Length: 538
Ligand SMILES: Nc1ncnc2c1ncn2[C@@H]1O[C@H](COP(=O)(O)OP(=O)(O)OP(=O)(O)O)[C@@H](O)[C@H]1O
Figure 1 (tube, protein in one colour):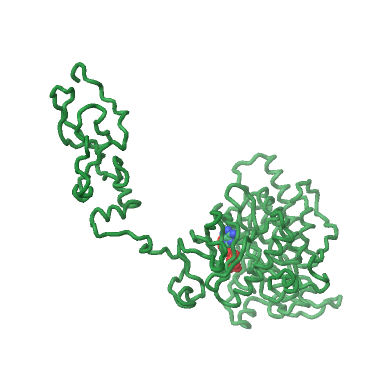
Figure 2: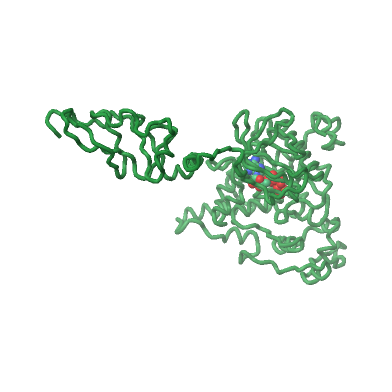
């Protein structure tokens, strides 16, 4: 530096003053509009303030300047970062190659070809529905009568209601698709179930709307009983759409993430308490969920073990058990398998299967067929009580009648697999065993510890927890629905309350009778559709 010359003060260069220079790979006449001078005014002015900003990477020499006003010329370095193109929207800023080829791709194209024009309407729409080929309903439905959903399409607003921007897919079920959406008015994120455009699904889903409305408004107005919230429903291009609060992963995914190793008795307890709370409310409303399983229990978020029960699409009132074929097979109870009348007790059987699965990481009765399901249950728990077998419409499908016993009671024995298979022309396979033990108590008590080298005090505590857990589960998977514990009874078990478990828990009689619905004239003749008429849902 010459004596008397001012030091370079790079900090006083603002990026907006930095002159853009053409990148090596794009001709400068393409980079700058014809009206814009290739060399911005002042680019080669002398004086430290006007020195171009120095960026990272190689610099290119673009001229000389008088460094001291006395004609001492020094080369001017144009500090254009290597491999970067000037941002045409922000003078003095540069775009990285990554940006040029991603978010600034339309500009990059426009630079290369002046005729290029970008229109967002030309974007290929990301389809979320499979198959996506238009078949029905003027081309908006596929061959399965599912509405073909695209990211950034809008649902709703047909009758002036809220509109929902489709963001992503959340799940798929028998009834339709569930997508993550954003309410375009409130900006809230929600889940929208878009039901198949078929009368059977449409009508059944209207029942789901009615049941959730009833539960949300009448039985759980404060949203404190772990029941999914339905925000509204509307029709979009003949598809019934149900708008729900948006939840997180389901419990099956949680088990899977845990590599099917099972959850601690403590965490299982936290989930069970919430499920019992939900089932208590359902029993009060005399509603049967009919499809309780880990996939239909969702975490509210990944931050805490708060859960919600979803999918009331198979739910019904106790007086309206029109379908004989309910519940997912692994969680199906003996009275349903054998074709008896059923009530809210069937959800308690499912709950028993679920809590064991949460603890073990594997389903308790993973039946591969109806026969395999019942044979797994019988293998573990023995025959169902005689009165159940006597009254089951399907008993003769699975059991042989073996005459009367010494007390004059009918005796039944499960058909051998080969007999059942030949009678029903099915390909039954022997049950694959996942545990070497066959009895529930042994499976649970001998299940390996998750902790390596636990202290004796930890072992004692865990074994005490497990003893309470076994006793609790046995009350739920009682073959006799009349003896099976109700949610209120189960909620009093020491495993749930945290009291010391001192031996088999004797339940007291459940006096919590369902209260008559406020809008129904007679509890005796209560039926859901009548009730819904009062609520204006039919
Ligand atoms: N509120 C929600 N928030 C987040 N994901 C959801 C929500 N509701 C449903 N899902 C996802 O969508 C999937 C299908 O939903 P749902 O069980 O209600 O549909 P379905 O057609 O009734 O299914 P199924 O075949 O079990 O009857 C769920 O397993 C879940 O993964």
